Length: 464
Image (cartoon, rainbow, N blue to C red; front, side, top):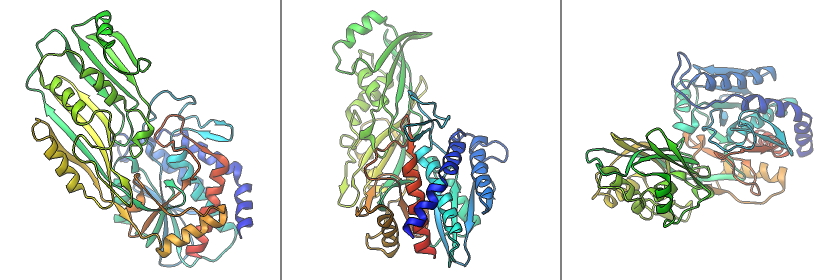
């Protein structure tokens, strides 16, 4: 069976590549509602293209009010779900390859969504085609469920399950291999403050902005300051420790613009990036601004957040023996003369709780005038490693790859936590680098085919 599956995947190579490219070329970043398009037209176009590809492969498809859709094979009352998403995070900057051109180089397809999660969705779709061509009788339905706002709240999958049957079991090709038995809890918090005390000194911070999404390490941040010339600013900066190659200073309409270029990464792996917001504020906090709420916030940030990504200084550091340490990421910031807004993304251990995290933070900052508001709270996911469902997924993975790696825990959050029993399962292999939410995201074509084979074997073992 293994050889038959791998051979079928190989014969589909050109079609798999073509379908992946077609989806990557649609810039399906969530935007404001447009008429019947709840997350903007581009997200709708990605959903429609995926369903069109599935229909051309001969499958039954359904669009659920442009929120989500599914592709179906098999018979029976029970449903095995395969949960993918077609929305992507903003592309960010500094790409070597155009983020929506789906260029192929050295056996890799480059583009936003290549690994997260359009390539894996295509792998799952063609896995279903492999099963179809093997002409095996399935005892239950298999549905590839395609959501459209996984990166910004997962509302679309909630809407889908209000309209359609929730699978008894489901796997989500939106993480790494082998099977994921635990996912950390996820919190988005807003730190905000109205500006009351303004700076009337010569040197002032007029505005600051940075970041594209809460679940991305910010790769760019910029500030406007006035009351100083470039020569004097550079003289002050000589006494500050920072990466001189990352900061750009230029003349702006209202003064000087300071722009910091960081490195994007997934918020669950902040150590893989370089947060431009944190690094820029670390510089600004050391400039001789006068007394003001903005200057006080800079000092607060430097003292309580700084360049850390484990929440130590703000009082919420934590870890357990399942999913390891809490992570803390500053995703988006806006400062103007009216207010300060900072959105942070926190991934907390399985044995902890959102209540504990928020309570710890509020205690730590009680002497500041900063308001903390909950934006999103997704509880951790945990399944025992020896659960029968996980064992079947692991068996499929091990048979196709020969790798005997064991189930792991991650900081990322997937659709797996939205069903009764869900497990994230691939597509990234243990030896591969994580490039989700980073520049030059790509998927290796040979690994894409192998993923399709693994998913096909899993479908056969579970639904056959």
